[in-house]
Length: 113
Length: 114
Image 1 (cartoon, chains in turn green, cyan):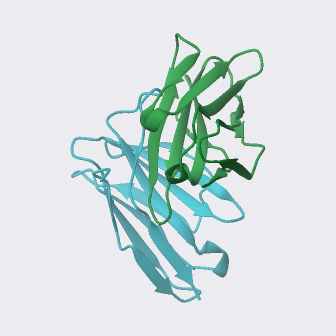
Image 2: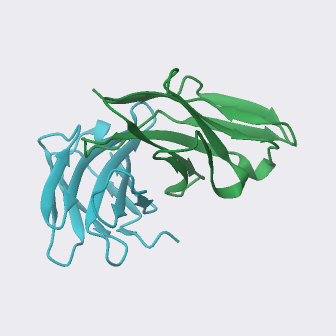
């Protein structure tokens, strides 16, 4: 069965510091992995995806994510956080043979000035 | 703006009632997905349609049903509503049904069952 886990409900970081939002997954076969961001009273917006190839994926707004097959992880990272990055972040996984798109429980990122 | 339109934005109703949520996907997108977001359950996949046909089913209750029409818009029908059905309901669309496609989300319909 497919699943995705975000072990942290909330991540707090100071502006200018690096940030990491964690995600681990379970899927049969090779996964398609995604990160989405949700701002208050808005729908989810696509940030980046991993399909194949380079394990480091670059996305919107300076975010990047590292795919680690041995640890079945896909952590979201940014070298220098901005207050405007404060939002709810969702990791999602979809297997090659499955139509269902599974989302994690979400991690609230708080960036303090 | 994602290009996905959901109406209404807010809906307040009573237990036992029936409501219909509407979604217009991005122009040209054939796939429509419905999700329920609540504080205790997170983002739950309900159902997916592709070009009018049901493609995948998630944790959708029997009291809920959906369809996608020939013009590709979709409706989610919720009946015999309970307090626990109060949630934010999202529609998303994608061009086809490939696993590597990203989804475009609407702004959601906030349903309050009183």
